[in-house]
Length: 568
Image (cartoon, rainbow, N blue to C red; front, side, top):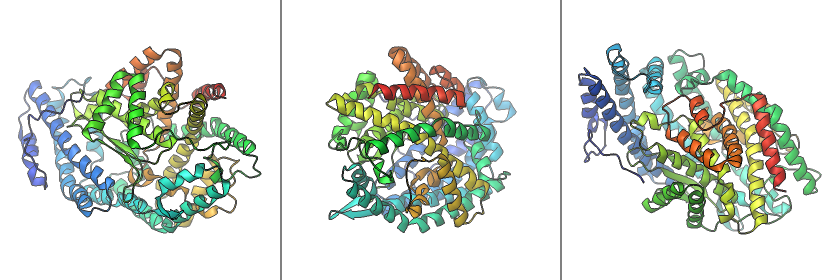
C-alpha cells in the first residue's frame, strides 16, 4: 500500500508561512557543485522531494478551500501561497532549470531515461518570462472566482434550498411538468450570474493574452499548447478531432435523441426530457449515502483487480474522500495526487444518482493511477499529461461495468445503467468538441465583445449539438450553456483530453471484452509508466493506438453501437 515519502533533504519540522521558510533549500540546490553523475542524480532527487512537499502543501490549501468556500481562512491560506510564495518558487525554479539544462550537467545524465523531463525543462526555459510571474499569480487568484460564484448558486423547490447539483436530480423525474419547472429554476439561477461570469472570463482572457504576448506568441491558444507540453499532437490534430466527431458521432447522438423522442411520444424533445428514463421508470438509485457509494465502489474495484479495491479502502480509512454535495462547497469533482503522502484525495458532489457512480469510478481511476505511479523515482515522472491521466479514469468507467451488480440488484436496472452510460459516452464527445472549438475561437479573438462571444458560442453549439433537441423559446439558456464548464475558467484548453482519452478507453474496453487478464496487465503496465515516455508509447503499451482519424473513430463507434444493441 502507500509508502509515504521519507524526507532526506527537507526537515520534517518544516512549516511554510512564507518563502523564507523554504528559501534555504532552494539556495542549497542552486549552490551545489554538480561534478559527477551521482551528484547530479542526488540533486534531482532532492529537488523532486522539495517539489513533492511544496505540491502537497498547495494541494491541501486548495482542497480545504473548495470543501468550504465560506471559510475565509482557507481562502486566505490558498491565496497567500499562490500570490506570495509560488511566484518566488517559479523564479528560482527557472534558475534550477537552467542549471540542469547546462551542457556540463546534461552530458552527465542518462538522456534516454530523462527524455520527457529534458524536453519539459527545455520548453519551460523557452517560454519563461519574469514579467509573467506576477500575472500568473493574479490569474490563479482570479480563476478561483468561478468556484466561489458557482458554490453560492441555489434554488428553492418544495420548501427546500437545493444546490444545483441536487436540484438536477429532479430532471430525472417521470413527471414532465416537474422536470420543466426545475429546469427553468436551475437555468434562471445561472442566468442571474451570467453577466458576472462573462465579465470574469473577459478578465481572464485579457490576462492570458498578455502572458502569451510577453512570451512571444501570437495568442494564448498557441502559448498554452506549448505550455501544456503538447509535443505529440497539435492544433491541426484538434481540428481533425472536431471534424471526425461531427461526421461520425453527432449522427449517432441524433439517433439516440430521435429514439428518445419516439419512446416518450413527444412532439418536441426539450432539454428537460434528456435525463428522464425513456420508459418513464423512476430514476436509478445506485446507492443511499456516500458511505454506501464508497463501499460498493470498493467492491467493484476489488473484483476487477484486488489491489484497486485496497487503494480505495485505504483512502477511506485515511479520510482522503470528500464526496457529498452541500452548501458552500465548490462544484465539480477531482482527484488530487499528493506526492509526499503518496495517497491521492478524491473530491466530488454526490447526490445519489448514476452520474455520481460514474464520477466516483472516474476519480477512482485517477487514484489507481496515482498509486501505480507512486514508486517512480522523481515527481516529474509521476505527473503524467492529461491524455494519459484521463485514459486511466475513463477506462475504469468502462471496464468496471461487468461488476456494476453491486449498485443494481436486478438485471433490468443493470442493463439500463450500462445503456445510459454508453449513451453518455457518445453524447459527451460532441460536447468536448464544442467546448474545445469554442476555446480556440476565444483566444484567437481575444478582444471580442460579449455579443460576438454569444453569437459564436451558439453557432458552434448548433454545429455539434443535436438536431433533434428543441431549444425553441430557450435562447437565453442556450446562450449561456458554456458557463457551467469549469475548465474554461480554471484550466483553459484542458478538455479535449477527455475526448482523446475516451477514444482510448473505448479501445481498451474493446480489448477487455476479448481478453480481460491481458488487457488489465497492459493497462497496469501503461499506468505504471507515468510520464517516462511520450504519450503514443504509453498508449501502445496499453495495447491501443493514439489516433484521431475519422476511420479509427468510426471503428470505435461501430463497436459501441454493437454493445448498445446487446443491452436491449
